Length: 358
Image (cartoon, rainbow, N blue to C red; front, top):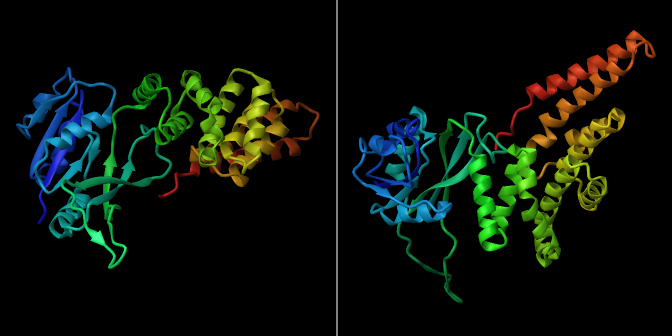
């Protein structure tokens, strides 16, 4: 049976830390808690479970804190958990079976991440595989009988373990600040982080968050990197951020520009939603309906799956109700009822819509 070091980084987690540790502590052979500046009872709670508690100065860098926590581990594998995660009874049993049977050649185990509240900034599915268990020391092996090479790709196992993500509050404000700080420090974001920034904006950002993000995406679109074929998807995503900003600032020339940019390739549901929202705002409901319909039934979302799901369905309902409200005698009661019935049908669809499974 393998041995496991639990490595956690925490800050002001007194509300959830015990819940997390109670669900996993007996599955671990070592518990390492790295505190990045708690001012509540987090460390006192941690001491109930381990004496391996370390302080680490927070510098808006989760990777640095994770690396420090991993450096303290001594067991065969490292389990990286967050304080707002929980293993229920069924998944504790799955975890124990995995621990007893895991083959030593497995270097990374992925587990299904399941969010149980509305406080998730990046989830487009009910369940998403995420790497959670890592072999602490990796050995390199030569492969192939001739023209031999070192095996570089890790051996990954997709397990059936489901981790319940149960945050007590949203995290997007923290994430947005880190994105901006990274841009200010480095002058650009990595491909991964730029994509995550755009994704989080469309899933949970306010209009103010979009405006704060404008320099990041304007800088990328103005750079030579935006014209490289390998960055086409990043440029499309950045254009969608700029499209949203153009709409909320009533900048029609830029709204037209970035809408057309999106339509030059496969139209996205996000762009259809933005165009629909513009026409809805100026009360051209028939035109808005066309774009919301395209978002719901014709286009695919690339950043926020809700833009091809419940969001346009709700807006279709709003449009048909608005059309019914416009008529006071110019239409027969039968025709107005048709508008109301159509609105009710789309409203029902929007309420019944659920995130895809995975």
